[in-house]
Amino acid sequence: MAGIADVARLAGVSKSTASRALTGAGYVSQATRARVQDAAASLGYVPTTSAVSLVTGRTQTVGVVMPSLDRWFFAQVLEGIQDALVERQYDLALYGAPPESAARRQMFEHFLARKRFDGLIAVGIEPNARELERLVAFGKPVVSVGGYDAGTNAVSIDDEAAGRIATDHLIGLGHRAITFLGGDPDGRRTSFGDGRRRDGYLAAMREAGLEASARHVQSEVTLPGGYGAAVDLLGDRRTRPTAIVAVCDEVAVGTIIAARRLGIRVPERLSVVGIDDHAYAEMFSLTTLQQRPHQQGRAAVQLLMWQLDDPGAPTHRMYEASPLVVRNSTASVDDAASAIVGVGHRP
Image (tube, rainbow, N blue to C red):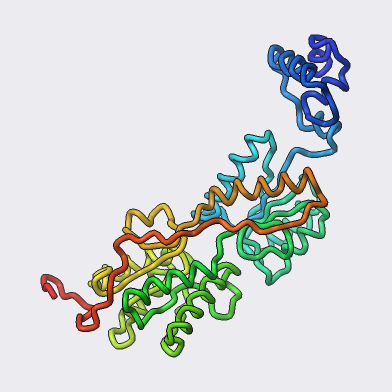
C-alpha cells in the first residue's frame, strides 16, 4: 500500500508539502496541489484519519447524539447527516440511547466524555436533563436539530407555527370541536418541539374564540399510541370532536386507522391533520405540514462545518420551511351528519 512518502516522491515534493496538499491544512500552490493529488490518485493513496489528524489537529469525526433510531424522523435526519459527512470525507460516530436510561447516562459520562470527535450534532435533545448544556460543556462545536437549542447553532421547523397553521386550516373549514392528540400534559414525555406544536394549536383556538373548547388528549407519539388514544376518544359519540390536530403524522395515521375501524368516515365525519409529511402520509391521503428531516440533517452538517472553520462566528438558527400539504383527510364540517356510519348503510 502506498504511503505519503511514495506520493511525495512521485510528485517531487516533501512529505509535509504532500500532506498539506491532500489535507488542505496550510498554503500550497494550486499547481503543486494538483500534482500531489494526481500522484495520490495514480498510486491509490487514501489519507488515514490518524495521518490527517497529525496535520490538522482534527479527528475527522463528527459525533451524533439522538434518542431513537427506529422512528422515521430520526432515521431521515441521520441519513441526511451521513450523506453530507461522506461528501466531506468525515467519519460519523453515532450515540443513541433512550432518555433517562442507564445506557444514556453511561453515554454522557464515558463515551462522549472522551471527546473523540471534532463536533457534535444533537438530534431531539430535551431540556429536562440539561443534556444539551452538558454537550456544550465538552468544549466542542455543537449543532442542535429540533426545537431546543440552548444558544447553539440549530436547525428545525417552526413547530409552533406548524401547530397554528394546522389548526387554522380546520377552523377555516368550519370546525369548532377540534382536539389536539399526542404527547403528555406534564411534559415529561412530550418533546420540546411537540410541546411547541401544542402551543400553536392553543394559540389558534384562542384567537378564534374557541379556547373553552380546546382539548388535549395525551398519547405516546407513535402510530400504535395514536391508534389507542383515538379509539378511546372517538368511541364516545357524545364528546367526539369533528376534527383532530395530531402532534405528528404517526399519531395522525393511527387516528385514521382507529376511525375506519369504528366506522367513522374520514374526512366526511372526521377531519385529521398531521405534521411531518411522513412516508405514510401520501398512502393515507393525509393533510399535513411538511418537513424534510433529511435536509435538516444536511443543514446541520453545514452549520457545524462553518463553526469548525470559524469558531468565533455568531450562532444562529436555521428554520426549514413547513408548507401545508392538503390531501383528502380534511373537509368542511357537516354539523347535521352523524359521525357513525352503520355497516351497509349510506348516510
